[in-house]
Image (cartoon, rainbow, N blue to C red; front, side, top):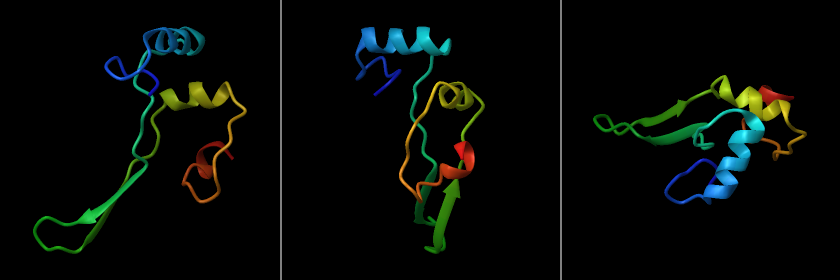
Length: 75
């Protein structure tokens, strides 16, 4: 896991941080779906990517599967 100081590989994390100029955990939950804790109704929460991610996308090209929700972010 890139940027994870506990479970990631230190040398790898340092190399990615140096390459991007950004030190952070590169993990993002695009969408989470669960039952509302009071009503039990389906609840979906979506969180767009933050601005740090543009730094990563600019270093592409990257490939994602269709329907992953990221197409709108990077074309």
